[in-house]
Length: 163
Length: 163
Image (cartoon, rainbow over all chains, first blue to last red; front, side):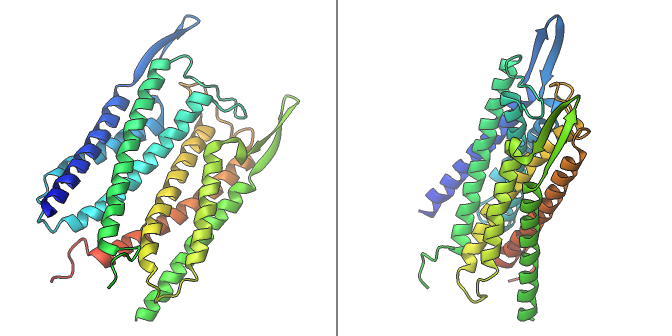
């Protein structure tokens, strides 16, 4: 039973690693050349600080997620891992929120500020960024679940186990 | 000693409550009328979804922070509070990141997307929003500290106490 649970947790962490890695790669490869009245320009993730932050945060969490996969299950470092999970989940959540906020302006624009949507000009770029965000979102949801599971195991916050 | 520690934690939570409440109020009252070539317009937080999200998140966390202040220190609900702290810290961090990302575009613009900075036209509005973000940032840092402190107490992740 404990072995199955350990294997399940490993699979969940593997999925989280895959999600953050895909988010990194998809965001890093998002670019599109477009021309608009003979003016040609290129849209790239590195032109937007929020997308750069998203890419870097996902890359960092991918490296962390990869390393954790190799931690032996008896290691006493698992207690540190829960704390690191917390820090990296915050980082991921913050980067996705920033990217989503900018992506929303890119999609819908903001008429009050006079910011026009750009997705009409560079639809492929927009789809690419959207894909990266979906992957990042899956990653943060999984890490959030892992954290809540750890909390549940350690703290029993809902007091389900009667003493 | 335990009493002093409890008092210190209460003071920290009071500060966090004050910070999120100020962030809510300062953001909610941020607006400025400006005219630009005979066209007059008003800048308000509610025109930007990210700022609305920031305001709502801070309001929710303020209510939560206020309620927790009255929880008796012997209550077994404190274990639930740690988990709720986690959820609300994620919410705060996410809302601040979104607001910061938009605020950055408002301040610096984004030449690639053709989004012009607007702080030159509505400087008071910008200062207001900046103030709200500083308060929100203080709030999230304190909640992050509370969480790490709880982790440290419960899990001892750095294995400082030798068994």
